[in-house]
Image (tube, rainbow, N blue to C red; front, side):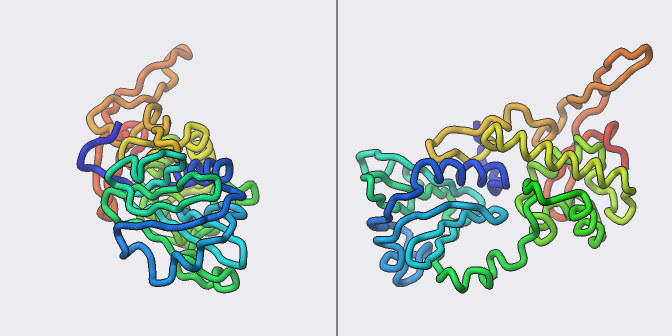
Length: 291
């Protein structure tokens, strides 16, 4: 369920879920037309550039959704704070009042952008120019790639100074992690969000790396987090919000079990706190994640 008045940007699990859905639903179809009631989304000539082109493949760079189109074109969609893509064959023009762009498809269906705050970004570019696009040029590696090893993680993260929470959210270091999953990762790793990156030891780096893989994989499996605007391409909520550990759980009891005397498992006594790190909220257990 959405929390009224609070928005977050879809992160790697939400974007990957959308990409997976799009590859099942629209890959191989042709874009036959485009409609919008918010012209600021689309540059002049956009509709002409993509109409009649086949969708060859959909993939992801960080939080950007990339469409490989026929004829050497690439379309990029960044959903920003409140955007999500819907796919279907609904009869009426719009299925909600926040739909501001519709791509008509050759099977009679539609791919629509629903965006409450109208912050999403859509552009089309020649494939040969794509690698120099500023939107993707300086994005860090994808943490879910099998080729992304601990040595890569440590080399990139260790270069930075400051609070580890802020560094995990730096898209130029590692792509796709935002406010939700940085909180969850650091809780699993038992690292305080304000802990200085330069004070982390080898074991702590390893814990963060392992937690990153674990949390992101789980969130993708559960189809993302829908405690705000995000929905999948069928309009359904993701399920990770139902199992989240600390994010937006201020004042609740820590969910961690710890080993007590005699091998008994005991609940942690901590109460989840919320602080500000670099202007963003951070949720953590002060007992499990000591500074």
